[in-house]
Length: 352
Image (cartoon, rainbow, N blue to C red; front, side, top):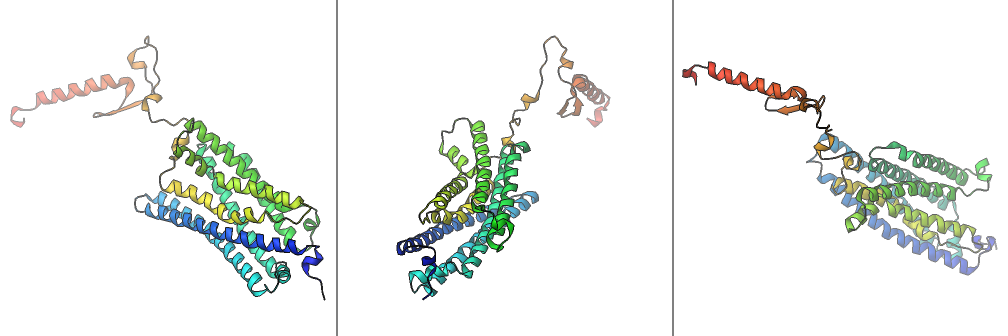
């Protein structure tokens, strides 16, 4: 009788049982997370759709693009969940005669195809989410692009490591696959680096603008705007995965944070877009430090020794007499008033 896969790997019956328990429990967690993500997505679409009639064309186009973006992300997450659920059904219903047969099917070609679809879909969602987070970081810093240089470099490294990860896992024997590198750790490390840089920068900016955070609204602003849930989930996953990878015993503890990745990757940017669309986020101009609502802050007052006419240079004043230069405003107004008075005096009594 041919040995089973678990026997070839040197796994005991307890190890196989633990694998199945972790696999099923993590799928239940993934089901719950995807349900939460669906609720967030529906709410965001409602917020985006309800503001179309009261917006100008540019705002409608921007929010339409946001709606398409979060719809693509939710669709990809649904594909990941659907393919994963079909894989679980095939494993434990169609090939679940015994623990060993189900474990053998988990390493079949069908399992590899499911893994490819899930990984590619998740990678696309991660890239979209990181781009949204990077864009929000740029907005919060008032368009100061220098702050986004380092996260952008990490994003490029993340894209390269993702390609190398796909090649090393599914090419079947190239130079990259022969290298003793776990590209999974490299890829998620670059993702975590991008998240930490953007999240940390956004948190610091919000604290700098608001001062001390003493209200629930300020806490929610930090949590949503910085996509802190997104960063914490990936940091937890990479830490648990690295521990399981280096553990001498069979360890599948990374199944649980891994089951949350797909949903959390979509929830965080969707919440950001929903917050902007609902009007609860700050206006983009308010993030600029030099922006002020007080017009008097733009005036420059000179010493009392200078003449009144020389206190303001090159400015225009708007009044009932039109746009006149401030330097000659008194003379222009007096001249206009005298002209009107002379016209009244010249008007015949019958016309008055």
